Amino acid sequence: GAVVSQHPSWVICKSGTSVKIECRSLDFQATTMFWYRQFPKQSLMLMATSNEGSKATYEQGVEKDKFLINHASLTLSTLTVTSAHPEDSSFYICSASNPAGGPDEQYFGPGTRLTVT
Amino acid sequence: KQEVTQIPAALSVPEGENLVLNCSFTDSAIYNLQWFRQDPGKGLTSLLLIQSSQREQTSGRLNASLDKSSGRSTLYIAASQPGDSATYLCAVMYSGSARQLTFGSGTQLTVLP
Image 1: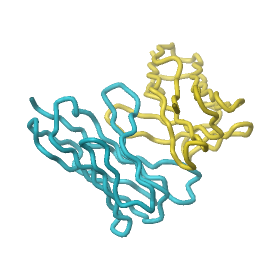
Image 2: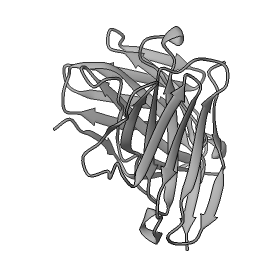
Image 3: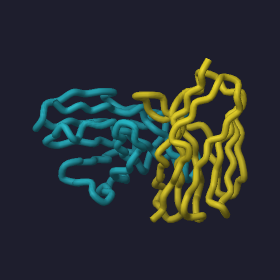
């Protein structure tokens, strides 16, 4: 149980275009989902916290107009990178919190590698 | 500022050795601490989760300890194997953090056959 999927697993896009990444909890309802970014040989940095039915909370330095997060249901959150540029190339990982599995454990998706050319 | 630090950044050992990875955190007010494994280009695999009230957790050849008063955790890997080669990440859920995890920078482990 407690499986989180991401789609796509990798994507290449041209500079200036937008890309949408999906994060799904497959076998549980996730009231809270988190989006992280990881640059090569670096650790995960939290971008935003997404609560179902409400606006996401962004970390300092993360542009909310560039990284649009939607959490419209208890099993799906999406991250849209708008007007992508090469510096947005990174590994994006989501996690989901499952209250039924314990009040404070997160389950991570497999990640999405974004390359902007 | 609540931070998580991992030492060493990289470690190379011969197969069969026992080894210890270290994690330190700056604030003892935590909900839990979690150890993850990450293979190159892949997502995270949860290894062990230690709740604030616990001192250690064990899974197979892995043992993680937690000492809140000193702000430290260790991950002990017994009888290391080449398949253990990966980056190991420590993450802390600080109290009052709305379930957010703060990650360390990781230890890249190479087990030589």
